[in-house]
Image (tube, rainbow, N blue to C red; front, side, top):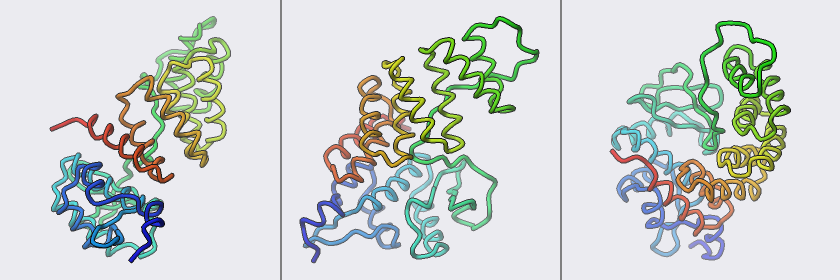
Amino acid sequence: MADARSLDSTHPYTLRGVTQMLGLTRHAVARLIELGFVQPVRAGRALRFSFRDVVLLRTAQELRAADIPTRQILRSMRQLKGALPLDTPASALRIRAVGDRVAVRWGDAQWDADTGQLMMDFHAAPAAAVHALGKAAAPGAAPEPGEDAQQMYERAEALESSDAPAAEALYRRVIEAAPDHADAYVNLGFLMCESRRYEEAAALYGQAVRHSPQAPLLHYNRGVALEALGRVQDAVKSYETCLRLAPDMADAHQNAALLYARAGDKHSAIRHFSAYRRLQPRA
């Protein structure tokens, strides 16, 4: 029997806590245990789950939320279990609904979990994904001289898909001209995170929140960049600041919950997971 004190840090979640937090039925959890995708330990007669288990169970919950039938989720995960090496870490996998299929990314490969067929690339961003603002269509004419900060910003948006370095340079000019232009910081930081320049992004967002402290998206994106750098406590602070400004931002609740869970703060994790669930659209 496992030591109760050690379980509090390594396997802090009970079966009841997991089902309430993620909205999964006991039957679905039991089937995922049977298939070996989650490996809880026993404390007496009770099951206790780790952070890794919660991540995998959350994936199953997200697939259900995408209207993938439970039977298909279980079938896909059974197929996946047989196809992956035993030591594959949970963090190496991204499992998402693509239409009515379950798609898996592992490294640079992606395939249909049921058939094993390779799939065209799908956007499998990390659980903590930086949010960018909507993009405008590419301009049809060369820019005119003497444009103001907002005109430069709109031109930078239009250039992102065709000339990211030029868009980045324009966003920097916008910030120089208007240091409180929150949208320019959001999109420039997004470009930095896309190219994995997380140190630059974190520094940029730090500058941004000094000029626009009431912009929740800046705090959220700063949290994502800090999380990518392994600065977990700072990332949590940024997510919490975001949520004070925008309590209904579901992604911030989800990211904060996962970080609290990783740190062993079960109560804060459950609080944020519950808020995340409440904010999900209902069919």
